[in-house]
Each structure stands twice: as structure tokens, then as C-alpha cells.
Image 1 (tube, rainbow, N blue to C red):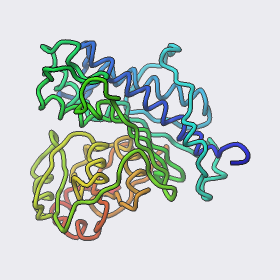
Image 2: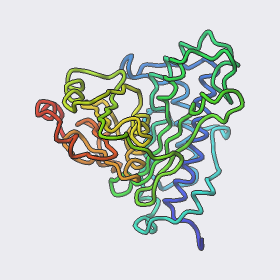
Image 3: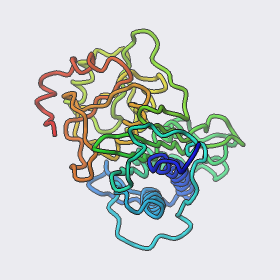
Length: 337
């Protein structure tokens, strides 16, 4: 390719390597067993040392290379000097070599907003740590798992954990990176642990094999630990053949794009912009749709409120069908932005 890559592609190329470093930080903290847990608003809203270090790494690394980009992270952290060991300076050469979609080729740094969730699925992460407390270092997911393995329930919890970096332009999610720190634990000792998927709308999504749910089965994925009557009523109204309850917004979108679910239904205001920006960009890049429960798209301008007040409805196909199934009582319970 000729000339310097467009800023959007350079930002994605940096976000890719930064997300991988953050994933390594998440694994390292788990291995130590010292999670440094604090409650932000209650027992279901936790922050760990991994959340703090991963966000510091992501924000400081991206700010250093892209000082004019607005970066919004989930964690409210004090301003402090960040050690060089947390800084990631490299970029994905593969992404740099790809052509930028024409509509983003002239975008300037100051026009971009980055939404960061340094550890999506914190509840599952802390629960997994508790289950691992009596397991030896050699048995904890690292470069692989030695026999005997930790309980399978522990490993399934770690599936929920992701690092999310979303990029927005003119209020729309246009690019995203999702790192799964513990992906590939099933492969055993010596296997490469973790993976990173990414996407840019109109360019495509990479790092996974796109699949759809076979036939006309309706498989709904929804919250594992933040349910209530409104959430349950909405899921039931979809008349699903199966319900998959997992943690993490990033993980739920992975369920969609890898053919394990046909709709992500969460009729609750519990989700935030940093939960959905990166996943929405990747889903959109493969032809999917993410809206609130009224069918309205969310805005990712820097000035918007962080809460996704009207819940989340995401699909790879047939979005209008699922939208038509949302009960009026549920729609009335959730105020659209």
C-alpha cells in the first residue's frame, strides 16, 4: 500500500496489540491469586487489580500514540504516572497493511472516541479465582493446562472474560477489538492461550470463524447474574428453543457470531457504552444489528450518558422478528435515551 495508513487503521492496529497486553495482565493477576477486589456499587459490581492495571495499560498506551483521541474507560481511576512495563508500543502489521474503508480514510484523531472495558465479566473472573484457590500454579490456565485440570465449571467461567476496546466516529461504533484472555484452554499444555478478534464496519471482522445457528432454532443468550422479572419476561416472549445464560456483553456477542446463539436479549439498564461499543462494531461488520429494546441505535459520542438505559437487543439475522416479540410491558419499563 502507498502512503501512511489512515488514522482509523493505525488506531485499530494499536488497539489490537494493546488488548493482547491487557489480556496478558488479566491472566497474570489471576495466577497470583491476589485480585485486590473492591465493590464499586455492590456485590454485583466489582473491580479487581486486573481491571485497574488493564485499563491503565490500555489508556496510557493509546493516549501516548494518539493524544487527540478521546478515551473513556469503565474504571474511575486517579490520575497517576503509569510505569513503562504497562505501555504497549507495537502495532499489528497485518492490520496496518489492510485498506481503510473510504468513508473513514480522512477521519482525524480528534473525531474519534474510544470506549474501554478493561475486563468484561469481572464477576465470573472473581468467581473463577475463588474456585482456583486450591489449585496449584501448574494447573491454572497459562500456556496450557497440566493434568489434573481445574474443575470444568471454573474454565467455563473464564470463557466469559474479555477485554473490550471500541472505536466510535460521529456517534457510531465503527471498529472494535475483543480479546479473550483464556481462550484455547481446552487444548492442554503447550497450547497458545488467548485470542483477539477485531472488526471495522464495511471492511469485515477477523480472528474467528463466522457461523450461524443451524436451521430455524431460536437460541437466546442473556445475563447470567443480573436477571429480574422484566428480563425473564422478555426472554420468554421470544419463545426460544434454548436459553444460554453467560456473563459479559463481549462474550454474548461471541455467542452470536460463532453460531451458539441467534439473539442477545437483555431487557435491563445494566449495560454501559463500554460494554457494547466494541462488540457492536464487530457484529455490524458481519451484518448483524445491535439496538435498544425499542429498536433504536445507541450513540457513542463522548458526551452521552454511559448507561444503556433501554437494554440491549442484538442479532446476527432477523432483528425485526425479535424486536416484534418484545412485550409492551417490557418496552414501557425501559425508557429509551
